[in-house]
Length: 268
Image (tube, rainbow, N blue to C red; front, side, top):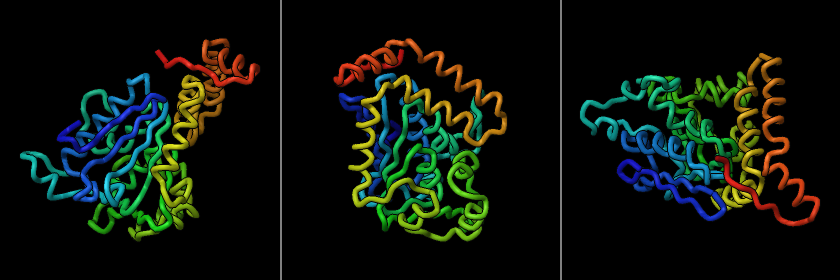
């Protein structure tokens, strides 16, 4: 990982714990952090051992957003460079730090504490499920700096809240608590210890057939906000045909019938 900004630890169950590791700066996003996050999503996307991912920040905060000074520290690098797209990439470099989590085949669970502002919130929104403390502080903060959110929020926020809520939060940049975020739909659960809760859920998911779980994530990612009903229904059928009779599907049925714990194999 770039300059040790992000740590990845994979346990024996296939749960990858990803830690934003810049606690002294509340895990603010400098150039090295962006690079490390993009590297992390790319690595996890191809690691077949990984069955679930827990994403959290070291120290007091999940991620306090953009570190303008940190971006300027790298020669020739600035905020505009985050918008650049490499050949073959649908998303820009900065967008991939958040959007990339939706491209990881395994479910990603974010554990939110402290500040979760701007780009930090967009990274959390890139996860499949979010836990937050009641007093966590969340904000779509870009308007404070005269900007719009530009790290994949058009792909994540419409799945969670209504257009009016999205506009209000974006127009005002106001800070809301984890408890209010739960009421609005930005977070899935409010708990006192998000990391422990996220890890417990990740372990539960890791015990299911990874082929079925990853197919389910793909199904929803590709169809949830789409209007092409025929393609969505066809994808349901296509994925089901691929699963039916596969080793892990047979193991799920066999283990369930026998009343024992299943022993699934990792995807190829």
